[in-house]
Structures are given as C-alpha cells and as structure tokens.
Length: 166
Length: 408
Picture 1 (cartoon, rainbow over the protein chains, first blue to last red):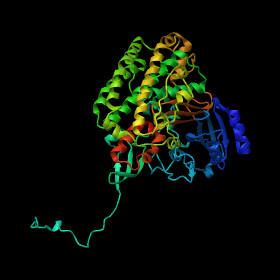
Picture 2: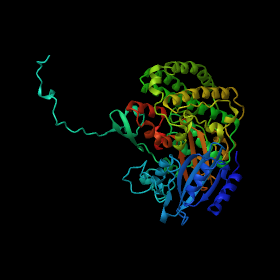
Picture 3: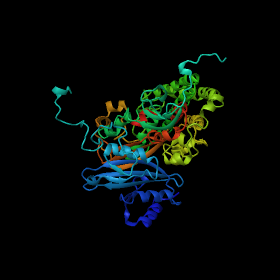
Picture 4: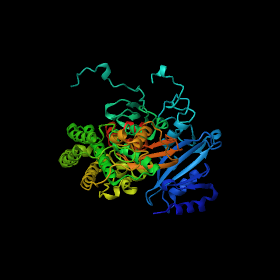
C-alpha cells in the first residue's frame, strides 16, 4: 500500500516541475501536468513496477469558461489494483488550441472515453484512430456540455404567470 | 443411366466460368432486434456465417443526464441515476447518495448502512437473475427465465415495501433511508432468503452442466485478463477473466468490511465463465443479505444532518425549524460546499463511478458518470471476431450491456 506522499515524491523526482498543483481532496491524490507530459506520465505510472497503475478508470472533460488560457480541463482517473491507490491527473488546455494527445496507445478503453469527451466538449485528441461523435447524432454542429448552452434556469423571472400558468 | 437428357442449366460450362466474386456481407444487427435486449446497433461484416469485423453505433437512448444534472438540486439527480442501470437501480441511487454524503461529510448511521447493503445486494441478485436467465433464453431454454422472474418479482415487492416503487426506485435519501425497514419488509426479506436458494439451484441444474448450454458457451467470446484490463472491464466480466477486482473489497463503502463473502473468479473470460461468476455472486449476495438482516444494528436510520435530510412529516407540521428545512430542501435552496469527489460502488456490471464537482452552488458544476457498460462494450467487436452470429448474440447477452447505462 503506497501513500499519496510517496507517489507524489516519486513523480516529482521523475518529472520535476512538469507535475504541479498537488492536492488530496477526499483522500484522492490529484495533480496537474501539461499536455506534453500526460502520455509519458501515464506510461510511467503504468509500467513502473513501484506503481503499476494498470487500470484507466475514466477520462472526462470540464469547462471553466472564465479561466482564460485554461478553459478546458481533461481529467484522467487511474487505479493501481496492485497497490490499491487511485490517482487523478488533470491537464488544462486553452480554448484557442483545444488539442491533447490520445491515450489510446496505452489503454484500449481510452477510445470511447475520448470520443465521449470530444462529443460533449469538442476536445480534439490528436492521434485518435476514430475521433467522431459517439452518443449524439453526427450532424450535430455544437458541443452540448459546454457552458454556453445552458439549460433553462428553474429560477428565471421573465416567465409570466399568465402565460405559463404558474 | 446414360440416357438422362442434360438440361441446358445442368450442362457443365466449358472454359467460360463466371468469375467468383468474393465479397463480405454487411449485416445490421439492430437497432431494434429482439436478441440484443436493448436499442443499439452493430454493423457487422460477415464472411458467410463468420463475423469479420463489427462496429457499434450507440446513443439511441441518450438522455443527456450529465447536462440535466447541472440544473438540478442534488436530491433530484437520484431519479436520473436509477434510469441508467434499470436492472439494479437501488445500487445507482445509493451510490449517488454516498457520493454526495462524501462531499458533504455526512456520516450515515450503521443501521442505514446495513439497510443499504441489504438493498444493494438484493439489487445485484435481480440484475444477475436477468442476465443469466436471458442467457438461457438465448441458448433456447426459456423455462428458467420465466421461473426465476417470479423471484425477481418478490425482490421488487421488497423494494415496494422499502421505498414505494419497483423499477425506478429513487431509493434512500441524502443522509440515510427515507423510512425504516417495516416488519413486512423484514418478513419478506426473510421469506426470500428461504425461498430463493431452491429456485437458484434449479436454474443451476437446468444450465450449469447442460451439454447444449456448455457447448454453446465454453470458449465463446473469450477475452484475456490483459485485454480485459486494457479495455476497462470491471465487475463480473473482469472477474470471469481471472482478475479479482471488486470495489466492495478494495475500497469498502457502506460497511462492506463488516460482511464475510467471497469474490468468485473465472479463468477463461468466456461466456460460460461470466455465467458462472454471476451465478456464484448471487449466492454470495444472498450470504451478505442474510448477515445484514441477522445483524441489523439498532439505532436511527438517517443521519443527523437537518440541512440535507428531509425532516419527518409530523415534525414539519409542529416544528418551525423542520418546516424551514423542509421548504429549503424541497425548493432546492441548499448550497453544497465546493469540492470535487470521485466515489465508486460495485454496480451490477462493475465499477459505477460518480465524479462530482461542486462549485458551492445548489447543483453540481459538473457531474460525470463512469458507466461500466459504456466502457466495456467497446471490446465487443474484438470479442466476437471470427465467431458465428449466433455466438455473437450470446457474447453480448453475457456481457449484460444495459442500454440505459450505455447511453446515459
């Protein structure tokens, strides 16, 4: 059983200032890296015998529209069955250059997870073998999970009782 | 017999044989096909009876739960979760409640945790009942399916007793359960513990050593442990390939560490192993149910978290604070603390994860569901490559792909 501290120190030793923003929300080791280092970092975690993070749990995206230069964040959850620890890696990318390398070379499961992230956020995974929409129709011309497409606000005040019968 | 007159079409042509064109047939399996048990399409390239390659098209019942969740207070998201894996909706509901409780830092009392374990294990039994008996139907044994359906009905009656609903259960509340186990519920659970084993044994007798069933399922749709891990398999499908990963054991939640149970694993990762693992898991679930009902702790069934847990009705009518909290909760005016949390439970099909980011508002800033079906279904073309169409149907059936969970 590895502690978060040990993993963090090992990663800092290997990647130096390319890994940063270490956190531990609810006990889950969270760190950020750059898109240049994300694939080497995942490969290192997977293949190093001290970590053996052989399982990619999840890939998803988040959008922070007001965070200029870091509008999109791609989040990777990984899990080491051997040492039973989870790790969360975040990569922030700007809206002007919305590219990140694909992880399909490392994990076969990344294929659909990345397609889903592309489908909903429009994040382009470079080198992906089949990057097209997965849950939405292919004719769709926008990325629905972005914050600029809000759902109707339940508390909006411009609705008139006479019209909407409330 | 030399005087048989050769008709023109019987005369062997000489020297002018038409050139044989080798081409693959494209077969659309789905979107609506009775054998796929759900709405998804597979475009298969067939060489005669053999599948050469396949491509899935999914998303037919995509309902944008993640987007809808961004506008809903936390308690209203529960109804979204039980429409994912509708064969075991209590697991989804309670998994979601546990995620929010983790974010809020609410400690649920032991009794509520045990009741949750009870419900989740009953849900696992119903989930596996469906999968295994449908596998029987797909190999031609319809009887077992109808027979065990009766037992699922009994579990649904227990759900009714606990939460009032049957399929989309909306079970539990943030902070506990909505009501204590009634004496009827306890009686029904005890009856189920007694009456289920003979039925399950009969299903086993029908299928486990059945020559036809074994011939149809052994070495069909195999996947190695290595490929299964790479493809993100979890749950019974991964365990059938020989990896003993179970969230209940590795990251225990809701007091699973108090219970004694085994994690069955298979060897070959084929359809038969998946069937056998699910079959054994039902016995283990029954063991857990038995332990939970026998050791049910006394005490409250909900946490002391008045800001999040709906107060009892008689208090609402008599007590000012309770009325205020009732109003605030129902109107969704409770702010959650900012934070991000990932919580995983062992769903019917594997690791069901909830990744919740709260920015301190009333609704999640971002909510992502890690749906096991969605992630492992992408391995399907690889698993049925080279097999015949009828075996591919069995492979899909044994993977237990639930359309609602696949598409969310």
